[in-house]
Image (cartoon, rainbow, N blue to C red; front, side, top):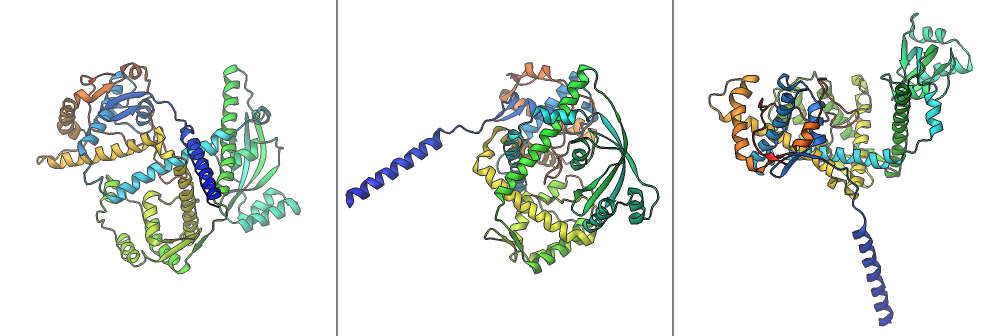
Length: 501
């Protein structure tokens, strides 16, 4: 008996050691190669980060051009941002703030979910050339269309009945349901800005003149019917045009297929999980949040710092919200997969994941429904984030760099504010602030960190910038702004410090 037990334990140990061996020898997550453009102590600036910071946000006038002087100002500004971040140290007030910590964690987790989408969606797309050819043949069309927009699923169903089963003309149905005689018209091309469902309906197969398509669901309770009045066809003649159209079609089809594949992956992750809301608590939370959502947005300077430090704002709706939410924080808000979420749990998650509403425009009567859907999406993202953590995506180089970019930008903004507050005579603003106060301060930091700064001059000289102002946003994510605002801390265009990398 003892020998059999000993043998069983020995076999179990060998099995566990074998599993550990497999786990230890598994290849780490493949990472994109990065070109480091500059190093400031322990911090680095990649070539990709430089380009994104220069091109994905609006630069100030003093470095808006594409010349060598402007390029040097951009590099000096980004290096200055890193130096300012280093100056704050580890024990500064911002780093100790819990709301700020959750915000940075939210930025990281959003990047991790995007990496998960890349792995489970984008990289699993396999395009067939026959699929590309089918769309390519009609991708040169410019359709002339008539539209009927419907903001109710039941009305859309009734219109479909009249058009398809009863055979009523599109024009009569339009007049009957809208009371208008003039039908809106529009021209649509393959690369026009439009809902993907419309692009797929028009360009996935050949259509006929006077054909009516729909209802196409654009959003919840928002549908559209389309009548094709005709089209013109632009044939790709030159080799450049042919290649460009083929690439456009390939890219669009890849996007469509990656989303479909990823939706299937999400369905597997969320299988068997159901959210049960506590009705009484839910209605109380909705009544508290709705006035905040519909109030007129007031632009505030350094709004993030106001939120991070929980500064009091002179706002009646916010005061009512704080008073009302205090008594609800320990109440059950909903349950999912055997776990209870209190209002406090939900509030903490909101700091990492602001709500993303599926519909961009809706009335106050719809707020409860849209709020519930946004909470459902937040919970879905929580489970996707857990999957990304299991895979170690928080350790991927580009994700770590993205987090550090936002951390350093926030810390630099904090240090800049603290420095200016320390100047008793400080009364200037705008360009005067930079030239009179910040330029000398950054020069002193260049001297302080001189031996810790390296620049990859060869790669820097290859960079070509544009003069186009652009503010890059992502859709349907908690944090839509892609990069921090450009650091307005120096107008210096001299690279007379540090050393060549």
